[in-house]
Image (tube, rainbow, N blue to C red; front, top):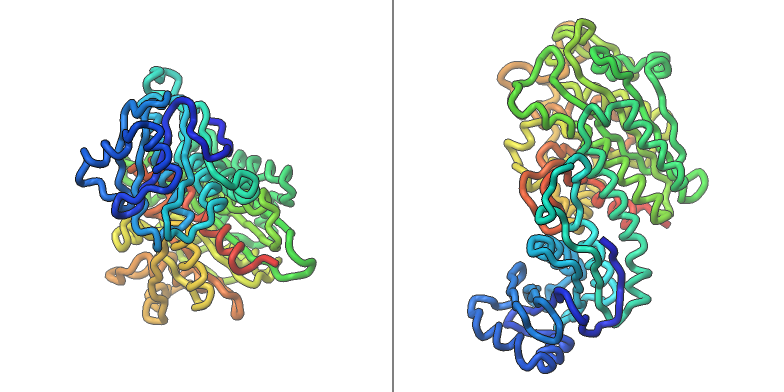
Length: 499
C-alpha cells in the first residue's frame, strides 16, 4: 500500500475518513464538506443517536455523494484530551475496515476539532504511521488466498493543511515502522526458516543502515566461558550465535545504552519437554531478540543521536542425545555456577551470559533485557502489560512512561532478598528455577538475572511473554507477532538518551 500526504481537499473517489469530537462536533473541513454534500453527514448523525463522537466510536455513511463511495466517521473523544497519537489509532482501524469491504483507495482527513491542542503536522504523521502498522500482514506462505481474502487497499492519503511539515515529522516514524515491520516478520517466520544462523544473517543486513554487526559462534563463546548459553543450545544441530550490534550516533566515548534480547528460535523445553499442544507457537520465543533487532533498525534508520548497543543470544532448545539434562551444572561467563533443575527455564541461562558480556565489554550506562521469559507473567498480567523489574527507580519510571506513550504498557513487580534466596542450590551457586513451593515464577526468574548485574549498572528486565504475540486484532497491531518493545525502546532513547 502506497502512503502519501496531500492537501486537505475532498478526494474524488474512494473512502474518506473524517473525525468528530465528543458531542458530535465536526471540524471545519467536515462542516464545509457536509454543506457540499447536501447535508449527508448531518442526516447520518441524526439517524445514529448512539454515535456521540466518543473515543473509539465509528459511523459509516454509504454513498454520501460527490463521487465518494463511503465516509467513515471516527470518534475522537474530548478535544481537550486529544493527542496526535489518536489519529494513529483511527488510521490503523480505518485500514482494516477498508480492506474488509474491498476498497482500493483511502483518505484520512486531519481535521482537528475546536479546542484540540494537537499539532496538525504531528497528527498527520501519526496517521501515516497508523496506516503502515495497521496495514501489516504476514501472507508470505499463503498461496491460495481468494481475491476477497487479500488486502484490497492500493493507496492511502493523509489529507492535511501542513503537508511539508507532516512529511518531515513522518520521516523518523517511517524508520520506526520499518523496525516494527522487521520484528513482526522475523517473529512470524517458522523455525525452519529463522534459526540462530539465519537470524544472525538477518542482523548483518543492518549494516546497510550504518549498524556495526559482529557475530560470535560457539568457538568464540566457549573461549569467553559462556557455559550457560552454550549448554542450552548443545542439543540442537543449529550452532548457537551471539550477535552484537552497535549504533554509534552519539558523542564519541559516551557510555552507551544497551539492550539485550532472548533469542530462543525454537523452544521444545529440551529434556524437560513441553506439552505438544501449542508447541508450534514456540517459534516466537525469540521475541525479545526480535524486538532488540527491530529497535536497532529503527534507531539507525532515523539516525538517532545516541550510542546504542544491541546484543542478542540466539539458540535452539532441542532434546537430542547431546541435550543438557536436568541436574547438570554449568559455569557462566561470570564464573558463577548454575544447577539446571529444569531445561525449560533456558531463557535466563542464555541471557545471563549475554548480559555479563555486554557489561564487561561496553560498560553501558543502562542495560535493559527483553525476554519471553515466563508463563507466570501471563498468569499475573495477562496480555495487557509486560512485566517490569528493575534495580533503578529512575530507569523503571522512564521505561514505564515510554511504554505508556507508545501503548506498550509495563507493570512493575518487586525484587527482594526473600525471593532471591529461593534460587539457592545445595551444590552450586544457584539453581535456574526456585525450589518447590516458592511460587512467584516471574519474580524469581528476574532475581536470577539480577545475579548477573554488576554493581553500578542500572538494569531493567522486561518479561514480554504475554505481549509478544496477539490472538486478537487491534487497530495498529494485527493478530500475530506484535513487535512489542520496538516502539518502547525507541521512545526511551528518544526521550532520555539523545543529544
